[in-house]
Length: 272
Image (cartoon, rainbow, N blue to C red; front, side, top):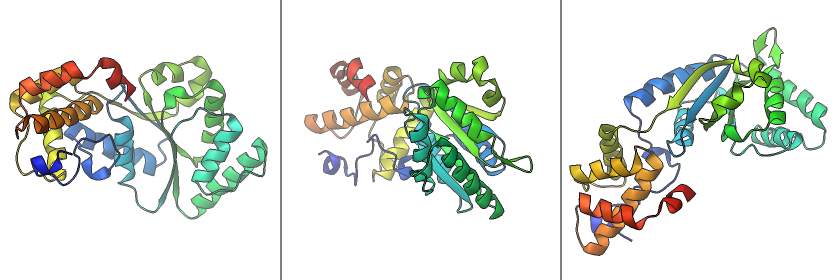
């Protein structure tokens, strides 16, 4: 709606996983290197945590972009399911036909798959998003999968991606064995004010902008509103661009940001 008004080629602040819009600060780039190392060299279990809207899933997808064909990746987006359905899910993601058997048959087939991949010098990574939603039975199953070995070599790399409360869940004594396998843990903090400026400029540039649209005071107001959470930054910036279009202005100032903050309810933001 407002693209032509700002000379943009596409929407810069959509809540999407388009990799070209991913912005990585110095701390993110360093963390990606560690996480990539952990996934490629069988370093056990990797954990990515962060508050709601800090970009955990986006960050995990940025990591996937770094992998080559020698690593086979499957992702469980929402692990609220029964054990057998979970096995069917990862079987489908890894292109293993499991749906004809029960739990024991699935485990045998999955173990065979992992051993075959190892024979071909291929790494296998299972990413479990929304890990804080895992129930105890599924955590026990994941622990079982993590125990599949070949000559004392772990065959499955696991990456948990979840909200901060997953740390409490994994710290329960029932999950001690699984927690002890976590060798790399990266916590995603909200963006700092200087990072928000870079974040906004990056997304505008990718969308086709050749100039700064948001004033310094507007970015300060965005920081105050969003507390550095990328999801809220996207929502606010999108509303502000629409408001600027309606007003017929090409620059977004602090006043427009404050008007948008008043117009967008907290409940609406949390729903995203």
